[in-house]
Image (cartoon, rainbow, N blue to C red; front, side, top):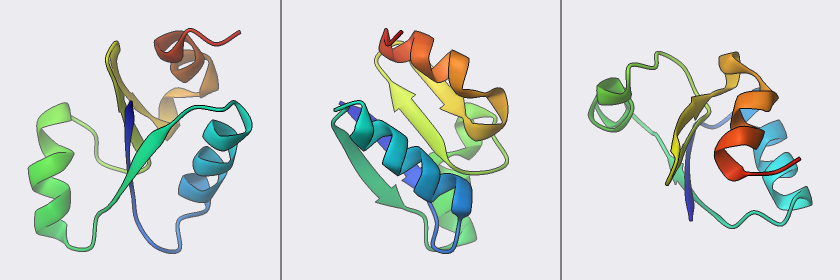
Length: 76
């Protein structure tokens, strides 16, 4: 299952959730409510913005583009 880290009022987060749902990808949406949440959960991955998806094949950030996420999820 994919862990999707997101925040409120984040348009890329909403688009990513929509895309995952449209592809039938199950995900656990983890809302980051504080800077401390962000540092603890996303900081070690090296990302500085959300959304971030963590899959069994690696991690993805919105800035890296959809092709990388498709590859991590083995979706054409």
